[in-house]
Length: 71
Length: 69
Ligand SMILES: [Cu+2]
Ligand SMILES: [Cu+2]
Image (cartoon, rainbow over all chains, first blue to last red; front, side):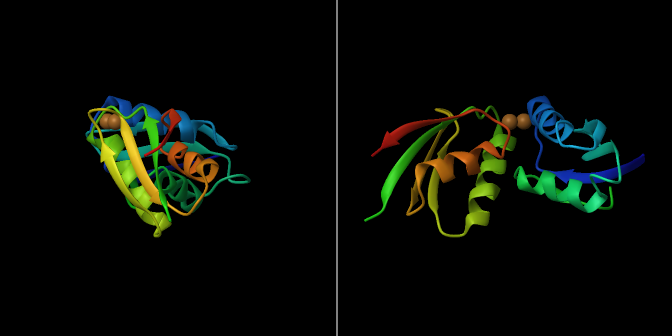
């Protein structure tokens, strides 16, 4: 397992945090996700056979938020 | 002629409308209006309703097709 911290821009409240945690949390290979509104990041524990920092960042971008690999 | 499709999207804040804006901008070929207060998104596009619905759902909110205007 691997843990990564990704930058997330564009969230304004707890409901933004929740929708990201819910949707990304359901992806195959995602074991745990914690999103922080204050720190503008997402910390994800994942299985490398299913996800990578790039694929996770892309999934967040796909939801309409801006994501970067350096948090 | 392109039609204007109305979708009810369960947006609750600027974050949601911002996310919907970025998702639709990525399509590149749609013009749209977002009415956050009424949780409505109006889209002018050649693409079909099913595709637009799936695209809107990417933001993680509930999406309901209302009809054309
Ligand atoms: Cu929000
Ligand atoms: Cu929101």
